[in-house]
Image (cartoon, rainbow, N blue to C red; front, side, top):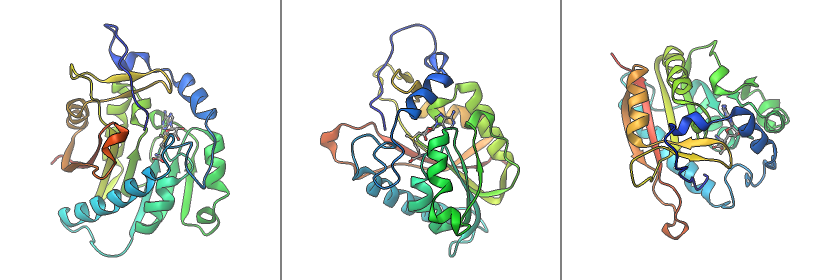
Length: 242
Ligand SMILES: C[S@@+](CC[C@H](N)C(=O)[O-])C[C@H]1O[C@@H](n2cnc3c(N)ncnc32)[C@H](O)[C@@H]1O
């Protein structure tokens, strides 16, 4: 949920991404599972609005996918760029029987490993790796990717989307929920603080298409107070193009 800044240079914004710098940044952030402050900047109320919006969006999407069960839990989900498991705890564990997690920062993973959800077996396999290095070994009903694709270059992100497409079950869906660029010239914005890019809606849709994914549904997350001037947040529900 960073307030991204544009770096004025001719090089493409994603060429500035430095994975080591991102990991240094996230390792400097407190791994606090109670308040999630480290994950979402300085606004603890943000997560309530965010998770409520995600629940509503996901129920809508399940009704739009032919043969997707609209009631009851999905079999297997995965929280990609999971952080301390905020989305797993507040959403995915309520809609999936088992939730795997992918996250490169060890101290965040440790919070997930020590959680009640891990002890009770709701959290399944944990992959200590960035999305650029994650090769799914299972078929997932739900792949949730939120507030982390900015750490991948365009090429890495396209390849990640291809791997996700191949890892979806027959009725599986990939959900991407991300901040959206507000650059006045319609460019992606590089943020030096965590070495990430915030992409435009157009760029993400191009990458989805190139990866063979179709947009089943897309909407803005509503309900954030306007006076905080946060970046707009958009959901995308994606399925393989036929
Ligand atoms: C803003 S937090 C979001 C965490 C979680 N998705 C949420 O919404 O609460 C960004 C997360 O991306 C992770 N991250 C950094 N580099 C990454 C990469 N290359 N692949 C996947 N996740 C990465 C960070 O460690 C951090 O946990």
